[in-house]
Image 1 (cartoon, rainbow, N blue to C red):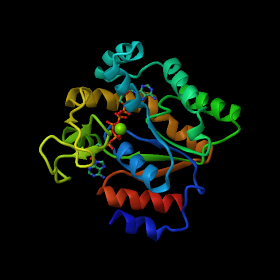
Image 2: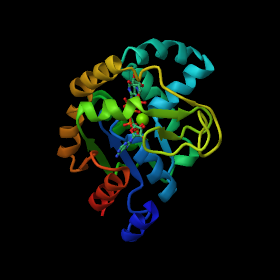
Image 3: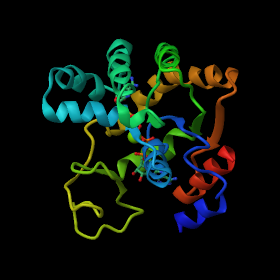
Length: 230
Ligand code: AP5
Ligand code: MG
């Protein structure tokens, strides 16, 4: 079904938009949409949240530093995030493009990304800002499960799970994130409104902003994003 949506926009290819940012509040669907676009257009996808959670899983020094910050709903420092992205965006697999999900998240990070892109003689093509309300996203996040093995995102109320507690794609263990308690989601929303929402004007002023409603079915949101990109 989703494939037929993409066929409707057959003029779009990975060459049309090579460097995209997905911006938006917690639970609005950044990861869900970014993963689908990455697969469809064969562009690498980075979720800074996933990168940090993998560091926590490995108990690295970064993971140990980030764990309590993430579980309290606050942001990891700009220095740390810029350092991670600076290294990552210099690797060969992202020379022709990338989809960023959850980065940048502050004006300082956005300015840092501009500097990285300038040094690498490249630029962003579009910033997709997904929009929605807090109560809808709390409901969505409460029924989200993530795969420990392949990172696939599942919603236990939307997707039919083939085997209880197992990922439909790879059979890996499904788990609920530690920062997905309603009181922490509300804190993440506040942090989003104070520190990330100003990026909407930042990118509007650079004529890169595409504002899309994140409310509706996953397919409807995909369709709206494709329409805006076209
Ligand atoms: P991060 O992992 O980025 O979390 P987030 O921004 O709060 O967003 P989520 O991942 O919770 O939601 P999403 O928008 O990806 O939604 P999803 O597609 O999963 O960051 C976590 C933490 O890491 C931060 O709080 C911070 O501490 C730290 N961090 C990360 N990046 C950082 C940075 N750059 N700087 C500093 N700190 C940073 O969808 C949610 C659910 O809804 C799923 O179940 C899904 O199936 C379902 N769903 C999706 N779309 C729909 C739809 N249209 N209809 C119905 N259900 C839907
Ligand atoms: Mg996400």
